[in-house]
Length: 193
Ligand code: ITT
Image (cartoon, rainbow, N blue to C red; front, top):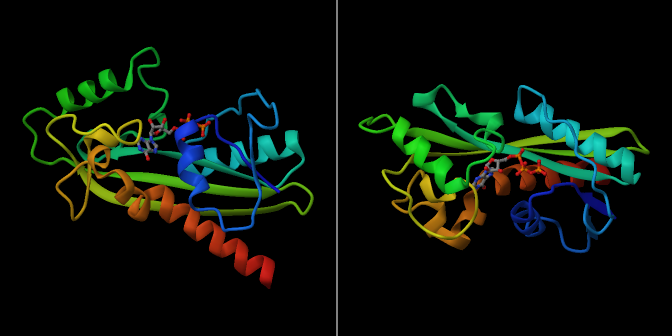
């Protein structure tokens, strides 16, 4: 049994798709865990590890966690690890409008979504991490209603549509798909070794 330690229901829905068949997943909600891990690391990997270790110790179960965000080159990587926390009282629509305003008139709109996936087994004291990245650029306007967070302003490389418009395609190329595919194949290799 594996604990999927995220409070974000969209992440739960996405990560479930990438879990190998036959592996039983429980969520923080299923386990009635309401504590919040501290996310004060400077990198995605650091925060993913903090979350996996924190929740694994509470639940006493092997645990996976995700730390992710959007990095915009013209804004020096902003919002980065602060993707969830900047403008804490604003809606995602307002946050996206703010980003589009900052990029107004700019042609250098390259960006990437990054996801760090961490696994921690408290009994074996085994930690495994993997990172996934999807390159792309920021659209001129908010487009599409699928997905969550910044999906409606991110156009992945090779497409004209945003993740908010691409719907299912997102899960075949996303940073999260890439991170968790790598994580599970590493775990598979370790467990089989
Ligand atoms: P947990 O810490 O409980 O997992 P969270 O939403 O706070 O949930 P993060 O700290 O990793 O998670 O913040 C990630 C934020 O980055 C997320 O809330 C979105 O704003 C953004 N983000 C990450 N992946 C995304 C995706 O696939 N599509 C759109 N936005 C994404």
